[in-house]
Image 1 (tube, rainbow, N blue to C red):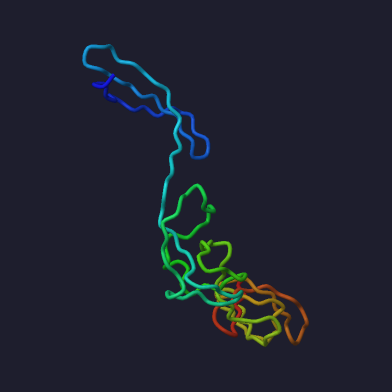
Image 2 (cartoon, helix red, strand yellow):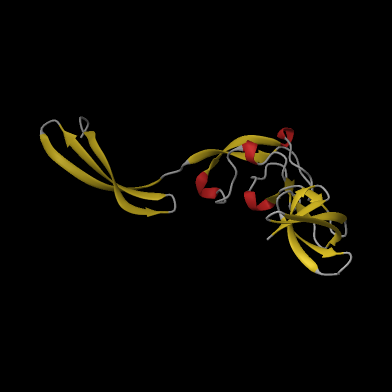
Length: 171
């Protein structure tokens, strides 16, 4: 009827992907209220970080490499980055294309110690502190675990990178 209008929109519990079902309650001037079941596609959009340019594996992401884009949440990976401050200074794990959505699982802390590098190992336990030299078996970023072979004993230990060239081991 030309004078009918929607009185109420009620979402149902059904939702699959971006499909949502609703009940529309419609009323007209001299008629009783009617209900109609409707199914609709509901898109949700968000601002996410994407690359302005292609970036090679191992490059560090800087502010000029990133821009925000409004994209449909339905098409985004779960770990898409929406806060650029959390990714500036991180290193890419693989080659990435211009326009690609930045994801947490494709980024690492930058490598500060390379595999095969000579490092100082600092050991501390309570009041005891000792240092030794070792050769790293892995590459790692700041605050990441790394395996080191002690140069004197050849024993392999695992520590945490605390600074370039420094690995700390705590008991």
